[in-house]
Structures are given as C-alpha cells and as structure tokens.
Amino acid sequence: MLSKPKSGWSEFTLGDFKTCVSYLVDIPFDWLISCKNAMKHNIPVSFFLELEGEECIVTSYNARTHIVISDEEDEYMLKTVCDVDFIDLSAMLLEDIKKFFDDWVKWSPYEQTQEDFTRRQAALKELIEETEEYLALAAKKYNKKI
Image 1 (spheres, rainbow, N blue to C red):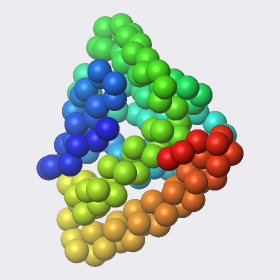
Image 2 (image 1 turned 30 degrees about the horizontal axis):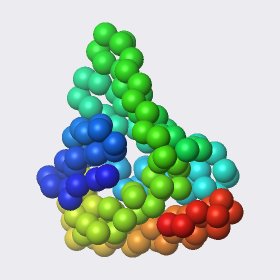
Image 3 (image 1 turned 135 degrees about the horizontal axis):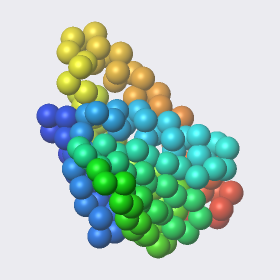
C-alpha cells in the first residue's frame, strides 16, 4: 500500500489507484491514529492525502474502500476498491510502517535533531502497539483473519 518513504515522499497504491504522497501529511501518525480510532469506536477510517493541487480522501468501513479525489476545478472522482475494509486497510498500513520503521521515523523534514528522531521513534512505536491491539480486537469481533 505504501512504498518505502524517501525524502518526504512515498507512493500510495490501492487497487488500481496509485499516487505520490508527501510530508505535508504526517502519514504514520495521522493515518495510524485514524485506524486506531476507527477500530476503537467502530467507525469508518479516513485518510487525507495532499496531492499538490488535488485533495484526496480515502475512507473505508464494511467491505469497501472509497477514494474521493477533488481537483482544482472542484470536479470529483470516486474510485471504489471492493473487498478491502477498514480492518484490511489498517493491517496493510501497520505492515508498511513497521517494514520501513526507521524511514517513517525520519519522514518529516522538519524533525531535524537526534532528540526529535528519538522522541518520534518512541511515539511511533507506542502508536503502532496501540493500533495493533485494537486491530486484534476488531479482527476477533468480525471473525476476520489478519
């Protein structure tokens, strides 16, 4: 779903939708918090993607994930990915962030000092653990293998 981040950029791919995402959104924190809250409160998960001139919202709940894109002329496009729900999306996000953990810690170009990186590393590790706990509970509730 997310490629290895490099210099504040990563590639987001879901279904046949692919786009570059930038450091303007703190993806590891913003998206994991959204996943954690979705599973904790049984609500849809939503992510914001800044696409430089376009806005994109990814939202998911039951058996579908919707990608809503609006361009500079306020034209909207909807893409739907079937058979990917909020539990699947959360599991994919966790997997990608854990796989490239150190790169996501250094995701933001604004975090410059070793102290910043150490603080961010501890906070991201804690958020991953919390999100994994809620993912396990949600998967059990919906009898879903993750």
